[in-house]
Image (cartoon, rainbow, N blue to C red; front, side):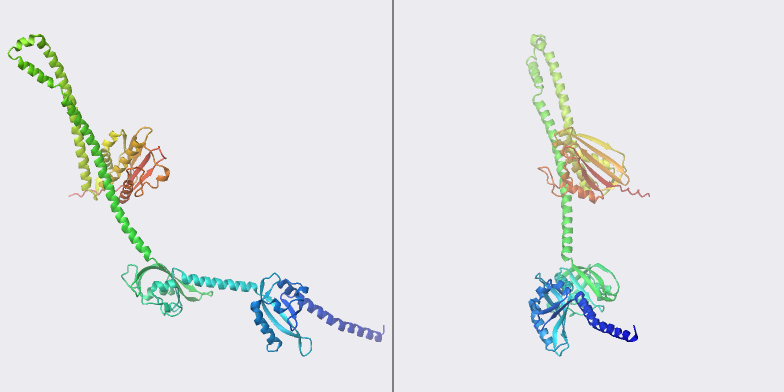
Length: 570
């Protein structure tokens, strides 16, 4: 090929290249348009769609044929239609270069899609624009997040405003910036000042703030917000607030510094709880508790007195029986026979020798011998009954004297052997044990002396031992036995009263020491409750155990061992 031919061929290749470049650029444009990650739609002046890319179809759910029947107006949400129409008119009139709005489009499914739409006009080379092009960015997630955030902010604002706990916030200068309704109510802030930023101090009122005891005013520099701004940590600080109207409130305040994302200080927030009602309830509870202690102690002493009278009554029954037996013996005494013999002998005083040697007189010595034997027997029986009578009277005197002794020493401590107190309590119940056929077993080990209030210990032991007797008496099976065991272990001493009585159901074990709880028809529920309180006053405890109904029960009094002080020598 010569040079001329080469020249002609080069020109033809260049012509072909010039012809292919527009087609290539058009292909690139179409591919970029269709594959763009944002929705792109072309529409004429009336708003009818001429072409939409795949992203636009995917956003709204319409295919190309369906969109030919749609327009911007038909797909725009009714709430945004007026503003969209006005914006497009301004765009086509040349008043604005492009339209940039946030609006809602209607999906084919019927839902609304929030989009950020930027619309511009496209010219085909002539003086007038041919169509508009709209670029859509899906902002539904952002809108949903904004709506959720707004809802949360509204909820938070409402909760803070209506929270029953007072909230007070200040800036870095200590000037109040926020407080809720509870704070306004607590501090007596006037309604017109309950907004933001009106007061200019950490506690915006004429209310006085005192320390917890109510005796000393708290300077502003020592109140929670001011202290927190200085770096102190304030948790549950108690104050007394006296409002301008004279109302007195007790509060607990905690405060914390407010810090921005960059660590910069923003101010402080105080949370203040009104605990006035709680403090009043605690005071009332303490008052009632003291009254209950007094009442329980009195009830416990009444229990002891009742038990003393009960045992005295048992002994008096024995006294009455002995007296009746002696009386019956005297009424039926054979001593009447002596009167008959004396009368008979007096009638024969003049011929006594003849009478004694006669048939009637010869029987007289035998009769006198039999009469003497009967009178000796009567004397012995009467002597035994009188001895029993005297013993019972002495027992009554001991019980009464013992109770008088303990009553006189109530509230005082003595150095005693606990076994002596146990014996005294058993002696008070001795008549009841004998009368009801209950066997008593003593298991006393060596124990050191203790310094203790004898009256309280006796109150506990008498009640517990009497309850054991009742439990055995009410039991219908097995031997009626009560074992009293005394021992010491390390720093404590214990007295256990173990019975073989009716036992205690598991559901009652936690209730037996409750005030007013009883399972006996004639019980009033004071005894064990007052005993438990008395044991606590002594620094010890009273516990109850049982394997269940019919299995008996064990009540154990545990007391601390307090060594008596050595006597002071001269």
